Length: 271
Ligand code: MLT
Image (cartoon, rainbow, N blue to C red):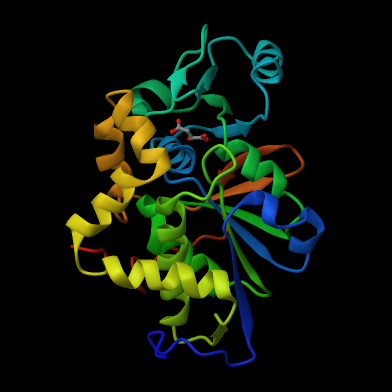
C-alpha cells in the first residue's frame, strides 16, 4: 500500500483531528495547533487580518459577542459572524470573506462569532500555540509550522458536529506540505493518512478541488443560501501571506509576530 511515500520517521507527529469533539483539550498541550474552518470562519479571519483589521476577538456565543463589543471603543469595533450561515441581527458583518475589505475593517477590532469555527478555536486553546489556517494562507501556515516544534495538531472545525470534506482536504494539504518541507514528520496517524489521500486525489485538479468544497456539508449549506461566490473565494490558495495566531492574554487573534513568510511553496495549488 503506497501512501505517497509519507512514512513515519519518529519525528514531529502530525495529528489530524477530524472534529473538535474527537480530542480532549489537554491533549493539545504538547504541541502547536492549527484550526481550519474553510467554509468560512478561518478563511474570513485570514481575509480580515490581511485587510488590516487590528484584531479578531473570537466568541462562542452571540450575547457574549454583543456584550464584549459594547465595552470597546465606539467607532473602532465591528460585530461579525453568522448563525445558520446568515448575518446575525444587529451585526455589522456576516461571514463572507469578501465583506472584510480594507475600507471596512482596517484598524478595527472585530468581535466574531460563528457556529463551528470560533468554537473549534476555543477548544484548541490549550495548545502551546494556536494558528488559523485556510487555503487562503496555506503555504504561509506550513512555513510557520515547519519552523515550530512538537506535535502538529490540525483541528478541523466540521459542520454542526459532522465531519466536512473541505476542512479535511485543507488538513491533508497542510500535512502534505509539512512532509515535503525537508524536515521529518510522522504522518502515520490514520486520520492524517485519510486527509492526505483526499488531498492527493484533488492535487493538480482545480475542478476536483472546487467540487469537494461544493459537495461538502458546509458547501451545500452555502449553495442553498446563494453564497456560491464564497465557496470560490475560499477555494483559492495563497491569496494571503498572513498567519493569524490566537493570543490568550489578552484574548484575541492577531498576526503571528514571528511569521517570516518567504513565499516558499511546500505544496502546489491544485491548478
Ligand atoms: C462556521 O463557523 O460554522 C462557518 O463558518 C459557517 C459559515 O459558513 O458561515
